[in-house]
Image (cartoon, helix red, strand yellow):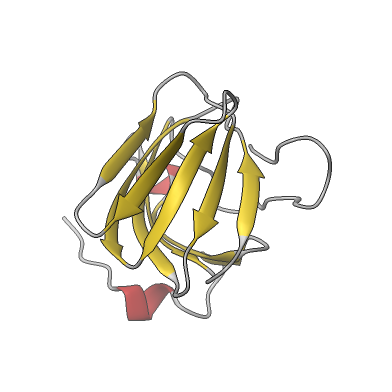
Length: 127
């Protein structure tokens, strides 16, 4: 058993600036749990084109507001208490509202921990 706090992760190699926010990687592959949990901050007013080809991701919103848009143009508002699951390696836009969007993100299989997005290109970023 172990206990790890968000404050312990901040400022370490598990504190990752992913371009439009920060990912605090609370569990990674080396923790041998079989999945990753991140405290994810999506910066206010940002839009990210994403697609995880190697991982399935679920996110539970713990603060803020934003939206997910699929590639058919369907928009799903995200608010505190909402969960979204990218169960088909879905390409999507993630947008934060006027304030930061705070998510608990779960990845399967787990992230190694060093992965970073490469945003601003015409194709989606992912790992």
